Length: 220
Image (cartoon, rainbow, N blue to C red; front, side, top):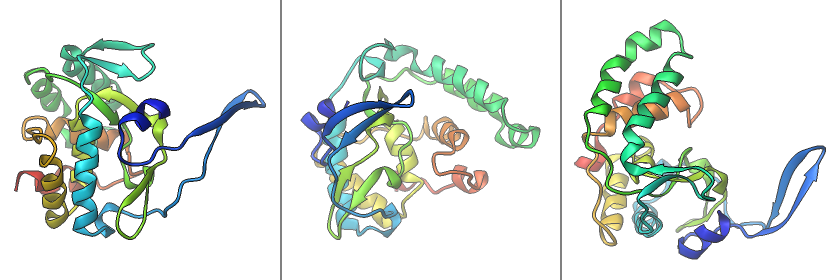
C-alpha cells in the first residue's frame, strides 16, 4: 500500500524499512515523518486548497472495482451500494433502539439502494480524519495511517472531510480539488454516507444529530 500510494500521492508517505513479528503480532518499522497533529478546522484556507489539489491527484487513479489495495478482495464497483446497504444494516443493529429510531435507518437504506451505482472507484481512506495526517505551518507533510486505505468511491473521503470544516475552508478545498478534477456530486449520497461514518465513529463518540446536520459546505 505504501509503495502504491507513494507512487501517486503528492503528500509524503512513510517508507517501510522492515517488518517483524513480536509475540505473534505483526509490526512494520517506517521512517519518521516530519510534522505535528492538527485538526482541519485549525488549518489555514491555503493549506486546505493545497490539500484539495493533493487529494484530487490521489483520486485520479481510477478503478472499476472496489476492495483492498492488495487485490485479495475485490468486487465490481456497481455492487458498492448493495454491499454498503448490507454493512449498514448489520452495524445499525449493534446500536441501541434509540439510535435506530433516531436514524430512520430503514429509510436511509432504501434510499441508498435506489441511487445510481458509482461509476468508478479510487484510493480512499475508510477512517478519514485529521489524525491520519501530519501538518506544518503551511502544508500537510505526511499521511501516516496508510493501513486504512482501500479502493472505493471518492465520496468516502469527501463526506467525513466536509463534516470537519467550515464554509471558508470547504470552499478553499473544493477550489483546489477542481483545479485538478471535477468535484463529485454529493447531494444524493450525503445522507447514507454520513450515516455510515457516524456508525463507524471515525472521530470517536460523536453527537449524531450534529454530525448528520452539518451544513452542506461543499455545495455552497
